[in-house]
Amino acid sequence: MNIVQITPGAGGMYCGNCFRDNALVAQLRRMGHHALMVPLYLPLTLDEADQSEGTPLFFSGLNVYFAQKFNCFKKAPNWLRRLFTAGWLLNRLGNFAGKTRGAQVGDLTLSMMRGETGHQAREIEQLIDWLREHEQPDVICLSNALIAGLAKRLREALGVPVVCLLEGEDAFLDSLPEPQREDTWVELRERVADIDLFIAPTRYYADTMARRAGIPAAKLEQIYNGINLDGFEPSALPDDPPVLGYFARMCPEKGLDTLVEAFIRLRQTGRVPNLKLAVGGGCQPSDKAFVARQKKRLRDAGLLSETVFQPNLDREAKLAFYRELTVLSVPAGYGEAFGLYVVEAMASGVPVVAPNDASFPELIGQSGAGALCEKGSATALADALGQLLLDRERLANCAAAGRQAAAQTYNIERMAESFATRLAKLA
Image (cartoon, rainbow, N blue to C red; front, side):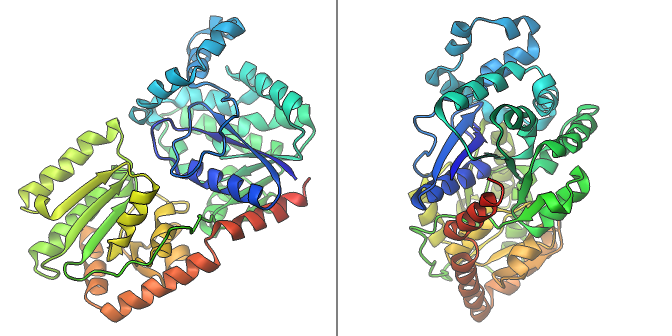
C-alpha cells in the first residue's frame, strides 16, 4: 500500500505521538509498504532516525499563526510564505514551543478543526496540491483528531479514505479556555463524519472518545501502540540502593510533584531508607519553574543529593536510564490514553506503579507488570511503592511479566501488522 502519515511536529518538545508515528512508518517500510511521513507545524524531535527526512514541512508554524492573527496574510505571496518555512527559522521557533499550553492556543485549535472553513484553508490546498503531484496514496492517516479538519478536503480532492489515530485529544481540548473548549468539541463531533476509521491505543481511550466525540462503533478500532524493542535490555533491579524512576515530561500533569512527595515519605518514614530517585524525560522552558519547586522541596527535605535529574535524553541515554531503575512511576493526574513510558519500562524489565485510573489498569493490571494505587494520593503511592520494593520475588515476577507483555503485545511489528491489515480493508 501507499500510505501517507501526517504528523504535527512539536519543535523542541518530546512528543509521544511523534515517536509512535515515526516508529510505525519505519516498520511499514520494512514490511514493504510505501509509507510517507509528512510533518506539520514544526520539525519533529525524535530519538530514532527521522522518517520524514526529505519531505517538505506543511502548515509552517509561522504561516499558521500569521493566518490566524492577520486576515491580510491569507493573500500573502508564496515567496513570503516560503520564507517562513525555512528550517533554521522553524528550529529556532521550536525552541520556544514548550512555552505554549492549551490555554494559549484555543482560537488556533478551533480554526484548525474547522479545516476548509478555518483560517488555514490555504495551507490545506497546498498540501493537497503537493500530494497530487508527488504521491498517489491509497490511504491517508492523521496523527490525531486535533487535525481532523483536514479530512474532508483530503477525501474530496484525492478520493482516498482517511484514518485518524487517537491519543490525548481529550486532555488537550479540556485545557482550552471557554468558549473554545466547547466549540472545538462540537466541531470535532461534526468532523467524525469526514473520517473513515479511528484507531485508539487502548480500550479505555476508545470508549472515552466514542462517548465524548460521538464516534460510532463501526468507525472505531483499538490497536495497542508498539515500540521498537531494539536496545532494550532488562534491568538488574538494583537494591543496594534501590532506584525509583520517573520518565516523562517534567510537569504537574504527569504527577512529578506527587512522586516527589511519595519519595520523601518513603525516606523519612524509614520504610525504604536508602532509596534513590531518578527523574528523566522532557523538560521545556515552561517546565523549569515547576522543576525548580520540586528541587526546593527535595532540598528542604534533605534529599536533593539523593536525586538525579536527567532531562531531554537521547535514545541511548534513555535506554541506559531505564536499565538503572528498580521501579518506575509516572502518577499522571489526567486520563492517560496510553503512556509510552509504561511499555518502555516493561521492555526494560522494570515494574511500574501507577494510578488505578484511565489506561493503567488495562496496561499494568492485565499484564501483571506492576501495581496500581489510588489516584492523586502521595500516601497511597508511597504505600504501593514500598510494598513492591520490599518484595524481591514480586518485583522479579512483575519484571518478567512486563518483558513478556512488551515482546508479545507492545512491539512495533505487531502494531504495524494490525494497522496495515485494517487499512487494507479500506484502500
